[in-house]
Amino acid sequence: MLRLVALIVCLVSLPAKAQEIVLGLNQNEVAITATFDGAEILVFGAIKRDAPQIGGNLGIIIAVSGPEQQVTVRRKDRRVGIWVNTQSSQIEAAPSFYAVATSGPLREILSNGEDLTHSITLPRVIRSAETNGGDIGEFSNALIRIRARESLYQVLEETVNFEEATLFDTAIQLPANLTEGDYATRIYLTRDGQVVDIYETSIAVHKVGLERWLYRLAHDLPFAYGALSLALAILAGWLASAAFSGFRR
Amino acid sequence: MQIYLPIAEISVNAFLLLGLGGLVGILSGMFGVGGGFLMTPLLFFIGIPPAVAVATEANQIVASSFSGVLANVKRKTVDFRMGTVLLVGGLVGSALGIILFNYLRSLGQVDLLVKLSYVIFLGIVGSLMFIESLNAIRKTRQSGGKPPARKRHNWVHNLPFKMKFRVSGLYISIIPPLLVGLLVGILAAIMGVGGGFIMVPAMIYILGMPTKVVIGTSLFQIIFVTAFTTMLHATTNYTVDMVLAILLIIGGVIGAQIGARIGARMKAEQLRILLAMMVLAVCGKLAFDLLLQPAELYSIAASTGGGNH
Image (cartoon, rainbow over the protein chains, first blue to last red):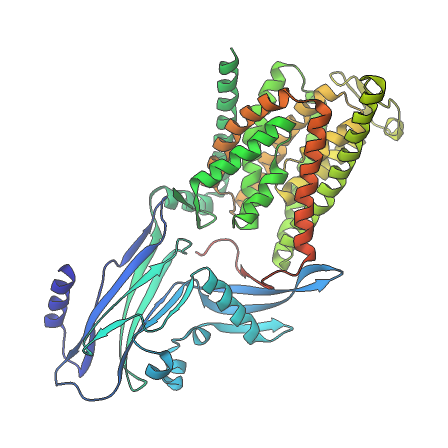
């Protein structure tokens, strides 16, 4: 019900364009609390039109992307009988999280050229830089494979409900091992593989409460954080010893 | 109940951590060891990043060894003077260990270093302990339980800078204890262990200290070395996870009390042979992992420091 109201409000209040995406999210903020166990983001919206629909095959692509990081991917090889990291590759920028959900098969609703321009699929998103030995492609494939296994990279083809080429909705699962930051959320409307409209928003993911306090303390005042860790450890050790001798008496 | 660890940045079951702490606590209570050599690999297995596991384990050992040393102070089985000499070596070793750790981390070889150190040291200590306790059991069967006499004089007694250690009843050079402390300090920083499993045999067999003061003195020294290591990891790598440490400590202190009671009912040789077998099992598992082809040849590491800000 709330969704519908939000939708109608959006539909009424937006300025005109030939075909335009109107969007809602069930939450535009994700709080990482002490018991955080992942979150589900509901993305829903509609295509607003001034004129009746002109033909063509319409598609919706929803991409949620976490903050970009520079990462090193290393490869193990056998040296003197044991497995040791040997070759490595710097990945200039890789999102900490990336999910792409579509209303139809990606090959059909997105042309290669448009993928290159807008960097939508995973191999286009990841920017590789240098490598010392080995093939760069192999390293970025390994990155995608490992992160996909941890649900950090998700390719969700044909999971967006797209009704009557007007209303669409989908759910994206954010795993528990999230990195803090702004998660750019982009919705692409395509016709016959060409992007005709883009809508951009962002979801803020941040630690709250104790989690935030501890994280900030560890990074801003590392000495105080270390001292506090030690004080707690000493206190726990003393309490345990006191409780134990109390037992024996 | 899932709990999100703020520094490790992963979500883990809180009861799993309490249980692990308790299990290792039982073993450490039974055998009088810190248990770091078991806990750190277990943390690797459940997916805690190695750098966080090593740093946080150092913090946990501060708690368990402080608890242990209090009991020993009451029984007057701590040689503070010897402990201080070992400590001086230990602090230098710990600082060297952190430098080595961070250097290899930048090369991407820290996992290898940690695992190789484990395989080598667990292998040596486990085998020695196993052989020694087998011999001890055979001797008690043959001669009705006369403990073997401690060797009184070896090369250790011919070095300069002698000092009197009244509690241990020793008059020896300070060089060997400094070196033992140094080695254990390096290991504490690299392996995330207190180093009791190396220090205790070294104190008995190299320094010739009486067995009754060995545990208390090693615990006394371990508190300071691991506290120093915790501070170094906290200020250079930001990898000490307080939430993880507290869960492990709670499980650990309860487990240790249960373990101490079980241990009191068993014979010393039996305990030692069990401990030796456990040490060898952990060593074997880690060695196999290095020798067998891993399922995933690639690994990912953040290029810039620990944080994302």
